[in-house]
Length: 287
DNA sequence: AAGAGGCCCTGATAGC
DNA sequence: TGCTATCAGGGCCTCT
Image (cartoon, rainbow, N blue to C red; front, side, top):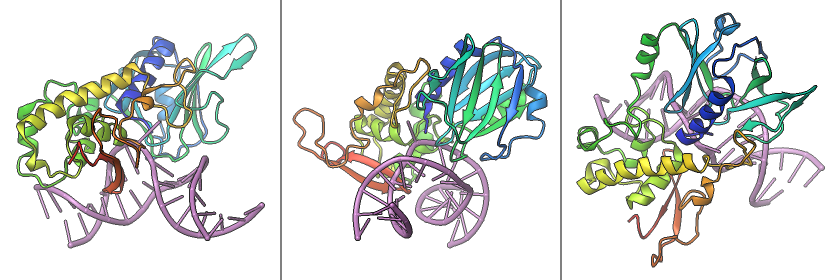
């Protein structure tokens, strides 16, 4: 479900609600995720204070007081719910990226804090948790990933080096986390629209001007999405029960057969499959 | 070695 | 109503 902007919103909400709090109790209801939950998961996290919460790419990073790190990925359908205690009753309308009600099925893990609990829910089980015993091991794991678009390393020389002579299309590169991390299918489509680059274009055919646009617009789109609270496709709400609104700004994603929104462009948004992922583009601006 | 494709899952929706 | 097919915001693994 989520790409970098949505994970950033989740991170901000967790940061606000559970940083410096101690995990009082953990209930594991279903260990089956993309990777089976580690057998020592509860032991390592239970009764530990959370020292920091951060994000890299589409991962949330939880830094524990015992210098362990717990990271998780939401896959396609993972959601986080924060349930606050209000007198005797639980309020259920504080949730991230899901309906205001706590889902009944697929709640895999519950983390209890003093006045609230955090639920990890994931119907499709593409998400996962991992634990690292030191920062070095955590960095080592993230080493496999390319820079985020915001990273200084994501510059013209880097693009040149990586894309020179490559026949793979540019959209697949944007989705390739080893090339650049944090971009998913929605934002890859939107970024290429702003760059006026056809998603099927072989990467070796990109011009210097294209490189500059890719660097500029990948930052621009992700930041705009974060400012709007992320994209909300299925009535998902964020931290305060509010809907993210970036989906109202989609130019191509899910706009098949509609008119291009660029003034004076008479193009139509087309849909095609690239590597089995839906791809949307304007047949005029992105020739 | 690069690149395409299959696969891991459940649930919502469209079409017959 | 009830079946089947298709699609979904991801990414790892295998095969050529």
